[in-house]
Image (cartoon, rainbow, N blue to C red; front, side):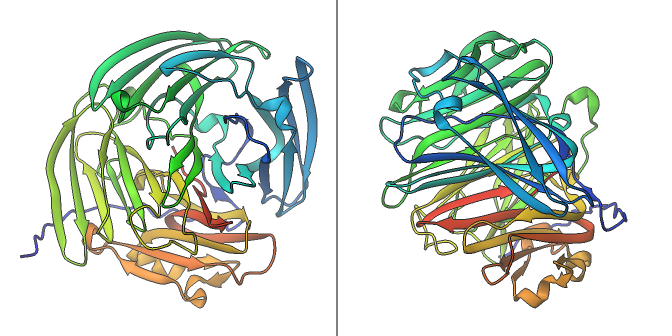
Length: 455
């Protein structure tokens, strides 16, 4: 018997000029870092897109581990185009980590980017033999926050979870609370130094059965960036590298929760796990609904103030709702349990899952990477015929389309194959709200990231 209930959602449709991308993650200032163990054929790159009418100039600054000094360079990004910058890994990559949920002191690990025009930045990693791949969005500094929750998939044997805490322009006091299976384990208090060249701090968690299902609540007195990495996570035949920059939790004093800030949905599409992050300070009543065409609840109520993980296999879609709290979430995608996704048969990736209140509007420019590439788009059903790729209706690309049962048919999803799209960049446009994710495969591995979001 199908369970039916109604949820009424009020959407604000924002009409803006087509040339503007209304997303907080586009900006002029960025901070990022790479983390990994020692490999032989690994490459670290940033990819910058510029949707302005003029060439953008980006200043890139890092601390050279070879020279023990600050180094800078410039990158020019042509109008309505992209450019990339590849780093010498021996200058920017520290690889000597150890610990089971412990803080490591590391040399300056921040890479700072300042642009004279708003741009979008994506961090890229790949390794040859074994093949490993990752892409993740680098949000602009104004879109960062003070508080974060992080839970990552379990690393493979002898591999690591690495969480980097990156200060901005001010010294920052942070507290990191470590939970295992939702039970408090420990708390660390640190001061992050903003002066460039300072020693920085990293949470390191080597694989061990006694601390499986670890999660971390990060609370800072000033905004910071967080980069969360698993050096190799188990896949069907081997393992893959995954990394992302978590979306910050809203500060309770700055936001009044509403039905859009506490509502998240997505296609299952080989999602192995979904990690749900309530605001962190108070209990949150969370409801989860899944569908295989007929909608049914898998959880009536979850009261939690730490990350909650649920497995979404054997379903087509899911929706997460919190009526008394704003939510953040992330998803771990792999082929571990299902058929190959998008032509990859041994890959994995992580994305944020922003709620409806963080959807974007307008035009966004993104780079096209490997030959097998896709986007996943979510929008209001009233906006389904108002989505365009390179000024062409999304329907001309023969997308897989699904009106989402779990949202009471109020939202729809598209999976769009861009493999036959020529060029090095593409644009996605709508004057309604939407959320989009880029997905591609390389050497049987998988990479994915969110194109942008608002905070």
